[in-house]
Image 1 (cartoon, each protein chain N blue to C red):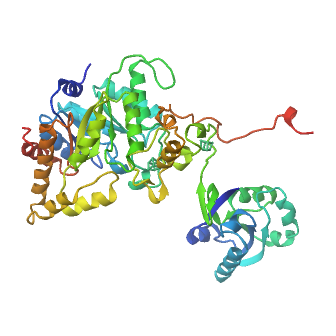
Image 2 (image 1 turned 90 degrees about the vertical axis):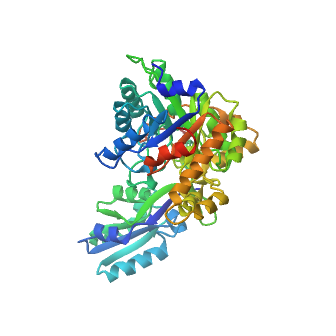
Image 3 (image 1 turned 30 degrees about the vertical axis):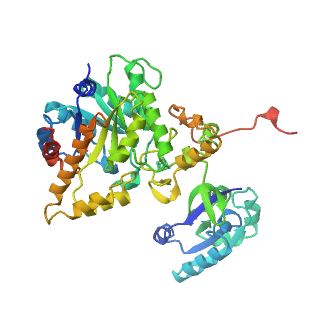
Length: 221
Length: 295
Ligand code: SF4
Ligand code: SF4
């Protein structure tokens, strides 16, 4: 399952964002941020404690099941009074959740987290970014590994000169995408795919911001 | 017009290139001094492009200075800071000003440099930049539009003969040649027996190869490169040799080693020439060449 991967904003930045806002309602989410331990029950408890120490009043808090779902509005309804009392909503969900809530409730929102990427839990407790939804998918030529995302530079014709022992030049904890692709294609006996000189990518496959509508005739009755 | 560097490459002589680095700022005195020292000694001078992602005076401006001073520039262009439109435009300008040699590089990641929050572009990669040059020469830009006026370049790229793993690097190398690279300057090589092995493979391709020689300035510098520079491998004997130099004589030792290596590359006809990189010590390049018996 794909997950929204987040990390807590630096304390200093959060202090700045909350400056002059004394009463705070905190919202977490039971899905991705619970998994990544950035916005579930325990993290909210810690945040409450920290903010109380700084003299903030917490008017209430809740962990909604799926913050990015439109049903979040109903989940928040029963907290109406406490939300009304707050100067600001401090939202410990990914940015999808923040935007969903901001659209539903007339209050200033402050994200407590930075949303890093949409990723996949590739092994226990490890999340990797594997697709950046570029709009012009080239997985068919790379053995199913995405260089647009997994190569730091998004190169489509093979490795740069910085690749070192199969790792990326920017971080020896990150694999060089082109070593992975080479190994995969080699295994499949399809190195010819890597030998093909790829032309420059189309960066305008879907003009940002993306928008897509279901065609009426294909909609299920 | 065929560039003087291209003529040198095709003449069959042992070609020597070196490099000069534009300054951080507008004071070109030091760079001009290096150009003055080198312009009549080497066949061409690479002008580096925001090397290691550090913002500097542009390589295009530096290449113009080389040209104005009567030298032969090789314009280094990375794909890190410009999209295809900006790269094409700079190529048109370069050509119009008589800068006809280009070394195409992907470019280091932004995070290594001094503008760590900047956006890395990488709209093209090095092989696509070579292909773009060949397309401009056919009178057409990457959008498929006709150009008014001709351009002509001697285009090159790089290879890391000691990359690990090597095979993906070699596939990229072959693609650069397929895209139209006429010359290749290699990453620094120190183990010449290994390099000979690489050349046994590389010789089959229609491309001129200049072996990269980076001047060693001290034993710690050699160890630093081994640890931090991808695909650079200074053998222990050379590190020991550097360490054995008397105090204050490490640089002369480095010059001696570089000279000796170049001499061997030339005598054994390993490849078509050398590219000497004396990072920060450009003024000793003539000494290296003398030590190699090249003056
Ligand atoms: S090429 Fe990569 S980023 Fe683009 S859609 Fe395919 S997997 Fe996603
Ligand atoms: S080291 Fe590999 S993954 Fe990293 S930028 Fe270079 S080619 Fe891409």
